[in-house]
Image (cartoon, rainbow, N blue to C red; front, side):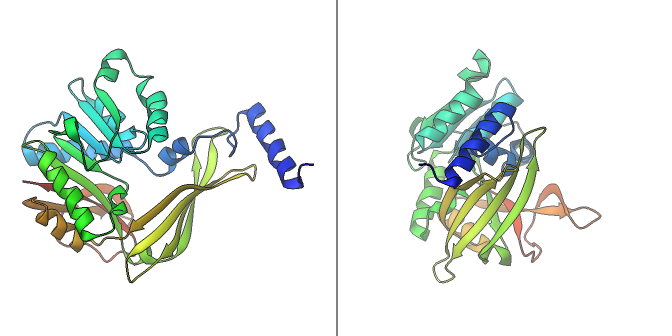
Length: 289
């Protein structure tokens, strides 16, 4: 006999399917992630504009390391008919979701200009020669030692195009070391409402290792717990700058977000050597020769 909880879940799933309202039973974790974590339009805006500022020309070839669903790569090829993109990731099911939901809906020309490859970022192979290489959403934190992270940075330096620029993002501040949860309601239209929960579950201040989860909750009380799981090392900006230089990059820029009149982030990032001691911040990094 089914338990009371199982019956409740089955009833909620049936109702969600009938009404089209999002629930844990009828929603993709990848779509939820894209809506709550990513802003590929703003990300590609920054990369496109900063590359042109640094190199005096438009970039055309993009490589998205740890690409997941290839969301950023897809946005890139929509910008110009001359743009091409390749995404690298070792998780085949996630790549397949990206193919079905991002690549296949594109027209024939756009599909010919994007590839999502099941490949280790340490061995880019024929994905070398890009104008821009991206390592976003702190994905490179999975490398937990200086030697491992330097080896990844060195592989990018060796495979990037002659005028290539390596772009990363970074999360820091005192709150990045706290074991805490942060919840945010996301409303993407009628029936597409959920709560995103960022769970900094465990942090070891001796090794810098941390375990984080992403959970999703829905108005019908259903939950998608540990939809995403991360085992990372929390790197500092000084360490990253040093390792990028050690890997061969001559120039490393850190871009700090400006503030609006209310003291909130304004979405404008400027290269600087002096940042604010914010309890939590996200910044961009570029590395190039």
